[in-house]
Image (cartoon, each protein chain N blue to C red):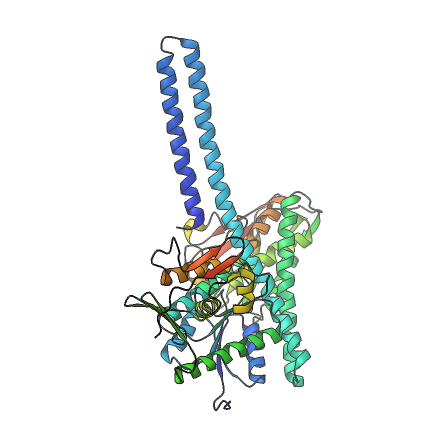
Length: 247
Length: 299
């Protein structure tokens, strides 16, 4: 494994000055380079001007002007896929769900444990590096799966279907990959939350359902009556493998 | 359309349909009983009651849904106001616990944590106070209070609390005589402090607040807090004293609060037999809050 030649740069988007300063102090102590943006507009400007300027973003939700959900949505819409960790006082299940839907890769409610935050940031950063390596050396792993005119490309994080391509978020990609690898087995929502996203069980398990609804749109001819991503009543979900077409 | 707007639309439509159904039934009742006066009169009256009931029911339902919405945004604001300082204090404590921090930094961290503890305390206080003024609106421990001295004290406190220079809040009070009201000094201090906090909070970058204490009539005392801040849109002037209500305007989006401050002010003013009112020429033109209390004539 090669050592990082440059400092990892982290953008902190936070309007509460005390928290922003405390985070910056800790990130710098860990050897990161940290930059603070005070509101959503400033964050968007920094992240869209130079796309590779930051390796990870810590994003607050309740910001003046554009809130964190909007910022994440706009970044993803503009094709900026930098890993985002949402850090916010809003910890209700619907807020967590909305965070992931708007394109966040991880979600941590305030007040948070410093060590956990650091570990999660390291995780995001590590995953980003792995992904980059996958892209650099394609073919080293079986990262595509094709069936009935559709191709799931996990390394490029997209689904290609009948000439159209859908971009997957990191979380969608991980979920789909897990289901495909365990094709034919019914997997509980709790297992998916824990194994795929590393969330603990107390998280609202319905969070998964919305992701499945979205994945069905990419995978199914008729999302309302699914044939591939099946709901297993009382358990969770099952990926039913159609005859795969070898790429 | 939000979920609540949809709910409101649904119940209004349902009400209209039910009223139409009741009217149709009423008409057919009249037709089937044509010529018989007593059943027709009883029928019309009863149908009328049903219709009136439906309308009253729907109005209450819609009001309740709206109140619910305000309550939700209050919960959001309070959650944020409670969790943010806790998160900050915890972050700094963990930092002090797990890292080598220079002596100077350590002191900075203590100051930050103290400020956060104070912010937390103010929020908790406000929520508790709002509960008290709602449950026991008339419970005032009365005694003579010199409002000039009390206001002076609050101004000094506000200057320290908001780190302002001494001229940022000017006090204009008669020096030669004391203006005395009958009331609870602690409660009145809360009122004046809330008004001052708002004036500073909604002033923008340059804080320039004038506070005056005066007797416009022999039996009345005014405490007036005037700022040159972002002002209040005319349409919302009436509602700002409502519980959980927060002004909606473009310049306000980064000002945080619970929507309880002015509700507490109004409740305490009323419990003292007084009132509070506001004047503002609109957005960007500042606001003037006046607390009017009955004066206690001392011999």
